[in-house]
Length: 343
Image (tube, rainbow, N blue to C red):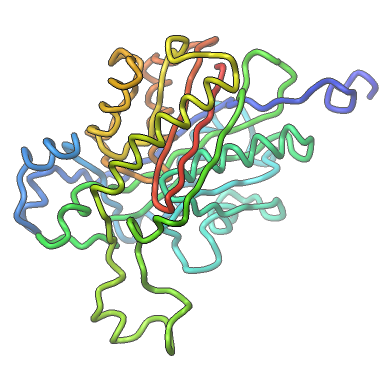
């Protein structure tokens, strides 16, 4: 068909056409955590901004089933049949199996056997990395419709004790998804994505075990006794790097497209800690209404954080056609990333 823009030389871009999220039914309030550890509602809120989070229900929720629920929601809103999806890019650090990845399990649940899947393991930056991958595949002409997913079940790996409370109070479970499709509209699209990493700080936020580079089998009584299967976090190092990298990568996206912070309609940051988001907001001189936060309801859901927040922001009317939206994340690795979108 000679008039098909996807065959002719018309530039191809990508745009988000549908958003969705799923969170488990099980709401865990700050005071509920007192049964496991020495803590309080005020202690948690003062340090993180979190009031509650969701924990999965064993036997009902899986990482893949949550991703599938979020994806069905996003596909419905995009008006796209699952059969039209060409590729799944799935971000998680908490897969259902060590291998294969949860992308395969969600693909099976959605009945999309035969299409390509990519598992992304970039921690809190996972969704933005996944979105960038989708953007590149679409702009390159290989695919027209990509399902981008972030899903996490973290409550089952947390050390819910006083010893582990600095980490345990932060994280929650949930999933978010976006349908990304090809477009020839040069105005309303993903303008650019920006990805970075610095492995020098890998041990500042990690789960060490199970790992393959061990003497003997990777999971033994000795490795269990060592407790290295718990999340280990150097909170001060993470905070210091996060506030710098957040601003760097946001400004990188703005500079690349000829904008300044004043041009932003909404910043949707990874929901790591309300103090990080607030520090970045103040340093960038953004009014409170231009930074969307929902960490108080869901905690830090890692790769699911940005798509959940983006979906809620859209549902609540904070995103309108023509708005300039920036997504930004920082996480373990260290890794940091941003995406600038003209909605």
